[in-house]
Image (cartoon, rainbow, N blue to C red; front, side, top):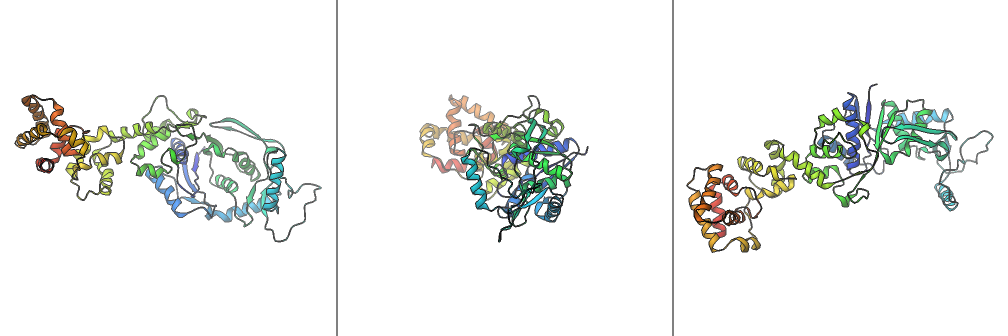
Length: 464
């Protein structure tokens, strides 16, 4: 079998984490089986779909390197095909015109709720043998409904949920074309999956109620039934449904917030799927290992700390030149006017092992390129007459050294021994004056990176 999967988002808002995980699993399964991965934009909701949302989808997929096969497919370009098959269903008696008004449907729903029964269209316009239909009302544009089988059941073996059985009597006759003639979601999905020879429909379990309806439609169209895999929800760490208050709502927000695409992919793959105890793996390994046997049917829980830990791993192991390309624009946005490439690369090397986030990374090394404002708290904590004299003595000697990282750090130890002081007595005041903080890696290495002229300038600005 030639495996074909698809990711079919609606361009009505942000591309969220749950959607991207669906895309990731669909992509990985197709790639593993040397199949085809389709990107289909389901834009039939003409009022809510926007070009901006389409760009968000495209940019998110590109950022995460989830490459699709062939051109992007837009449902709005396939209206003629949908109308053709809607007419076919009408002709074969599997669909019918329904003239029930919205007011009548609201009244019916209210009555059913009061009676304690599940709200459902009552089939008043459904053609049946020996049934007399109401008279066609004036000035009412009908919808077209699918004639759901009145008995029997739909069952499928879900690749995640296992065996699922739904009785047809629980389903109503869904609308497949609105009163303005535009086709509805469930019908378009069925036609697209059939025409595009989709073999595996992978989506969130919020769609599981649509599946029996879509299977009935596929049967009426004499189309093959794909295999279904319904992925469980992603919950926030507090067990609630993931929302904006739990973090970034949009996938692209994670890029803007300083996360690497490799980290996001790695983390999302572990939300509901596992390969033994492996926490860190590449996209290539994901393709090799992915299967549905290890996709959990339980809801996954989003853990921000785990995402940050994975992000820190990829930052630590990313080539310096690639990190520089990612950090440069962030520094420029922070007001840096001139970037020295050597200073930037050396600063990245020095800080790389301690950073979890690109934005924080840029903020931590900002002092290399801008003057610092020494807070009153740090000044009072670290600068007194003794520390000022120690700094003056240290700088007077350090500028005589052969300017290498090793020589400067070696001399710092000698200076401490010579002055009979503890290392923090010189290191902490220097950190405060040079970096504007008391939390940095090796202050000797920072002095080396900045160069003696910049160091002397910073010290004189504070001490004078």
